[in-house]
Image (cartoon, rainbow, N blue to C red; front, side):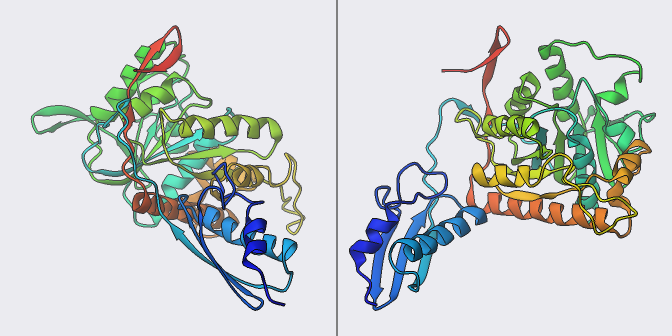
Length: 379
């Protein structure tokens, strides 16, 4: 069968590039279409550098031509990525990078109880096992749990002299440097602080600490989208964010809001991807069975819907909870399904950080004021 170029162009008008509003023809993404017999070559340029967007674009083009033009057509897609020129935004200011720290990754969740701190701790352990220099800042001011998970709840940061200034030396265990508000409060003491006090405490832990050389500083953020998040993003140029969710709809709805927060024009922190925690349950006596207690593939489907990478899933396993409770994260195990899962997820996070650093400019910290509890970007 001899294919007609006009038929191909008409078919491509029915699909859009992921993350763009117009169809492929109207947006100018399709640069050229060449037909020869039953062969067709489509040259297309997109702005989204993610592997998921590129693959989805290619699959959509091939499937559409097969469905609407000729099912046996031999389709070749030449895809090129051209990121749009970044315009300077007067509402954004350059953040204050911490000397010696290469990448700052925020670990967030839309709601509490989805295992964000557990994921943060195990990501940090796995990065350290891979040979990276890692630190964790427990930014969950009102519910710090990182000291317990690293078995350093009774430790206190020491003071060190750096270039004539007194700095906090983070507590270290398992090859990971840790700072948390939990080091400065009693176990039974509630932190009852307004936003400005919490922000001041965070700034002290960020800038009055001697972190040394780090490849990754992980920020364990509080659940939700609030003042602490804005304070962090105002203080630091964050490399990217990882969002943790469980599969059920109520958690996914909040996770979607978390992703939306980072993507706001006034914030623009790249979302490295979504991790699904408590994905399924496998009883020890039935190792081949999977029970999807909270739903199946919820976070994976959400990642596809909002066009962010899916970084992997973590099963609901009793030993993960027990390991965190006794301050010996599950990723410390020499082998087994749990450290293997965290290893795969961590590799995906590192790949996304490398891709983000190769294709996007450095993140700026945002300039924000708070009025009556609401954040407003300075005009």
